[in-house]
Length: 201
Image 1 (spheres, rainbow, N blue to C red):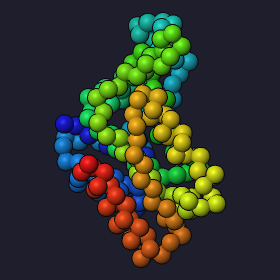
Image 2: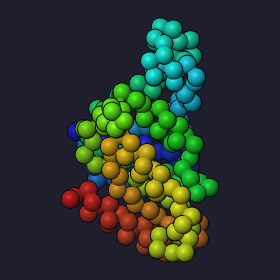
Image 3: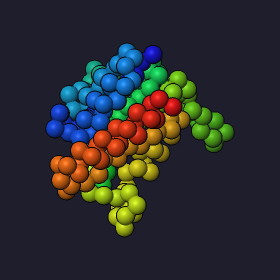
């Protein structure tokens, strides 16, 4: 059994999302694949790689730089296809997800590789993932508050994962830069308990 762990915060051990991510590592203890998006090559798709993805050209026609992009795209897709679980840790930045994580999604959501379209219907091609967990940290409280409409992240991230038929369980640590250390520690403990229950189910 393999678990793909993706972290998209550059703050290392100071990151609250990574703190939750580390907790999950201790619980899902199978073979682990680590992907640190801020210390990895996460390229933007180029014009010619997009064309290649949609069959307008051959791999041999790509430039050396475009081949590098296509190769790393294949590497990240292979990581998904060889894993049994996916755990993503990310902060909420400017009501949205970090750019490196969005770029990773652009790479792995690839037609006829992780999804297909037949007769105007989507066909999901990733069928090996058993659990998908997303742990988030954000500075303000949105859940069940008047600020809930400003949560532009939960829906889109679940939609991006659904695109390749992955149904995510989200765990939010809120008030990261607002609550006292005591409040934050208690909330973190509660969320870790929820994570433990979900993993054990």
